Length: 326
Image (spheres, rainbow, N blue to C red):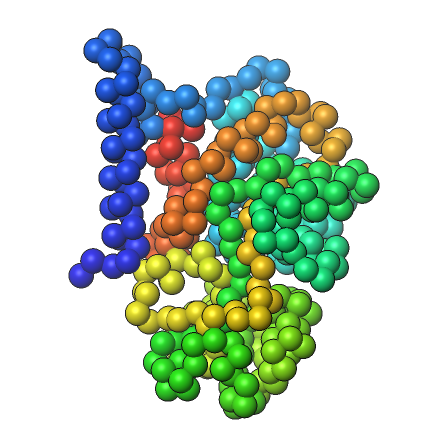
């Protein structure tokens, strides 16, 4: 049986092959001395700069699959650029990760614009436009001696997920449809969901929902509690591998009142590190993000969550497939 993620993987490989073929054709009939992997003779290739030798950077991340993958992508790319890179990729929630940056424990970490603005800086709303949200986040960071690099192409968001069988049983397609029914339902979500406006607080205040109970759960178990019948609903991410791999099993209720802003990923760092690391620091981070569309990010998540590959190995695959490293 061909699963959703294997179909996506095949399509991704086909696109890469076509792009490679076009690149070869465009080069004409000259000799090809490239000995790299599937990236071919690519302008994407990160070159090691001797000026970066001895500059120490510590890449951080929060504690779930997508963050592990992104953290490894950035760490491996910066290593390829010649930096001395260490990692701290299991920091926990956004408040823990941001404090680690402020305390100098890490040089930077990937964060979602919506999360940074709402959870860290207390914004009541987030611009829908990725550039506007980025500009707003950067404006909040800079007075603190911090900054952020340009956002990823893909945007991720919280979503209210259910088993399709449960949603069909209840006859619900939107979050508003849960009014009059939520009091009999058990909701699961990450521990910080309880305090966030784009999570439980928004469901209560904006939608007027009161659940039978809210239960904090490790991010990696949000689908497990649905599968086992422990949860009637679970707060998930729109880039989750399970959604593309099992499109007929899970359903996302439409956020008809807009409490779940989409969030592109930005690299949050401090200005002193930017000055110390030089121009390759920002250029490398922004370069390796260019291929991170939502389908690609779902595929990378699937390799870890469904195929059970190591996040560091998946990051290496991505960097090689797009020609960033050999």
